[in-house]
Amino acid sequence: MGDTLEFSDIYQEVKGSWNDGRLRFGRQSVVYKSSKTGKVDSIPAAELSQAQWRRVCLGQGIKLTTSTGHIYKYDGFRDTDFEKISEYFKAHYKVELSEKELCVKGWNWGTTKFSGPLLSFEVSDSPAFEIPLASVSQCATGKNEVTLEFHQNDEAEVSLMEVRFYVPPGDTATTEEGPEPVEVFRDRVLSKADVIQATGDAVCIFKELQCLTPRGRYDIRIYPSFLHLHGKTFDYKIPYTTVLRLFLLPHKDQRQMFFMISLDPPIKQGQTRYHFLILLFSKEEDLSLSLNMTEEEVERRYGGKLSKNMSGSLYEMVGRVMKALVNKKITVPGNFLGHSGTQCITCSYKASSGLLYPLERGFVYIHKPPVHLRFEEVSCVNFARGTTTTRSFDFEIETKQGTQFTFSSIEREEYGKLFDFVTAKKLSIKNRGFKEGIKGKDDMLEDSDEDQHDAYLERMKEEGKIREEANDSDDSDGESGEYDSKASASDSSAEGGDSDREKKKRPAKKAKVVKERKPRKKKPKDSGAPKRPMSAYFLWLNASRESIKAEHPGISITEISKRAGEMEGEREGDREIPVLQLSSSHPSLLSFFCSPFH
Image (cartoon, rainbow, N blue to C red; front, top):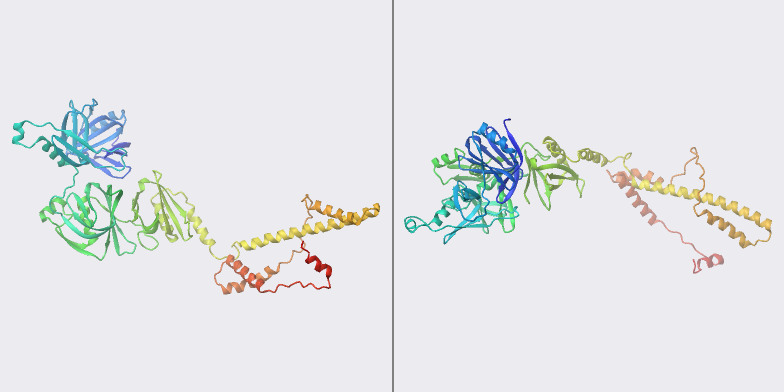
């Protein structure tokens, strides 16, 4: 048997929603990592006290209890996994994996037992269901009734709103001496429930902090177990257990700092969900902070991470306090430096402009809407050409779930730095040839008389070929017409009885036959024959090209042809158009032009 056991597609129930991940049993600890949020649960092997194997809705499940009172449940195992997990637990953890049957009778009366953070409802000494008390948001009592309300998960298809328990009244002698059974039940639930109550004084208070999401200025009160945001319109209470990550990111102007808090579940304001709390600080703003605790309490609770009196930049004070109370590391930018020398890239996401931060383990976009993408959930990236201008490009990130994030309007100068960063992180790139394509396009943008494609010149060449072919066809038609007229004349002299009108009709018929595009053999052109002379326009263009370049320095070939066309049009407009004057000395010609059919 190896040192570790790993299982994929193992599910953890979080407020009615199943989150999949990977579970690894090691000699030192049991580690579970969620694929959705990246959150890691680490259980030291020395703290494992009990393990149960149970049949659940997703196959087989395991329930682990620690000596500190925490309980972890993971589902999605197969029946064949029991033997190897049981042997591994005996060999490395010295804990026996026992099988536990659940009650499926469907009875609604039984006995409630409080076991750490779980409320178990048992029928005939077998658990029928269990309620994690951390999911309880409120507990109310009535006459012999206790009502439990639960936190809602927006991603769960079906949510449990409340559960009511009927608690039989105790004996009269018992109730006179002590509290009612209903009150005892409620107190035991509230002792483990996730009910936020602002009891006691705050550890410290930060006044009028600028918050980008949710927008406004808030007073932040720091309590030992939760964070209280108090604004003019809304109040938010955020338990530290919902904080996933902390980020401290510099603004591109190097004068401001972003402090971002990742939350799961998010805070709510009506139908809006805020997965990130973003604070904006000025580097020049300082603060002297005094904690509402004694030196002994600060040392005992936070172990040297904080002191009673602290001073420094405001963002440093907020980050230091949050790091100590939440007990999580603060993520800062790594070694990436953009073209401008900063650790972020200016871009646009959807309809808003913001900043993209390439970090050591993911990407962060600030601020509307905030986005955090871990490298683990990225399937591939793509460098796309900008849709509006050639001076920018788009950076597309596609996740393993099929969602695509497009960050547009990134300056072309940032491409090399970003490409090298993505390559160093070994992310899959869809179009690796895009970098060479950009270099080729930059070369094409340079002025080159030899290599630049002149569309106007090519069109004029095509028109010249068409005119040449038309002249060749006219010459062949003229030769056939002369031959036909001579033949008709000989025929008329032989017959001697044809009229002049019939002589005119015969060559017309011959010409009509020629116009039906019958296949005819084209005379081979002599390669040594002289070419047709250049037209007057091209003679003028070659003579005027240098003067146009002198008047417009840096002009491209296409712009030279365009400018030459405009100048030629102006020259033609200045010319005088000759007018045909008809006099009475040509009465036949005058009658021809004055005829209504002409």
